Image 1 (tube, one colour):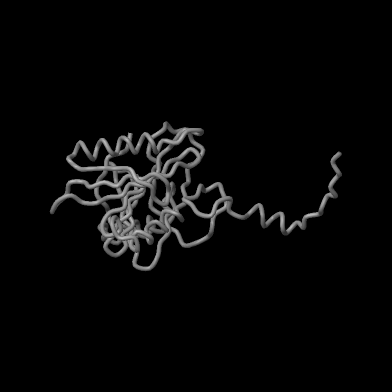
Image 2: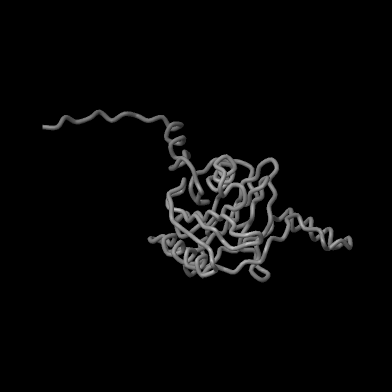
Length: 221
């Protein structure tokens, strides 16, 4: 009833090209999957793309580096990575917690659709009145990436596009060690940055830091 197809030979080069091609059109990427090569700052658990005019700050929880902030013109993008269950994402849960926290602080928050799926459009209390913030979330394999867009990019589509592209090119390095869900994936300074700090400290200039220290933040639980 069914004819037998003739088996076609596939060149080895074509097989290799298919194997190396990204399975998706854009990230954020898992370090174990094929992804485009570009200039990124290696922070251990996160590899953050950099571009002309970008400035990177670090978020601290005590003495631990748990997040990074990318500043671009009048906008800011804060990114953090967390451990997540192998089969279930946590963005729905985290989004509800964020909305409750914003409203509890006297702000407003509503869900809407964005380039990464459902996001949270919020207005948080701040100096000079409510400040607009977009909360984005992406569930990956055993990790969750949370991003917060503030400043001009929270309202301006052109400015937002620059930071959204940063999110699309982030690489998350989850690691193989067991971690409870919601625990932040710890970051670290790049080796060359740490070496530069050590050299300056030995020369009696301990205040030099390749990255500015961002605001202290609480870990998401």
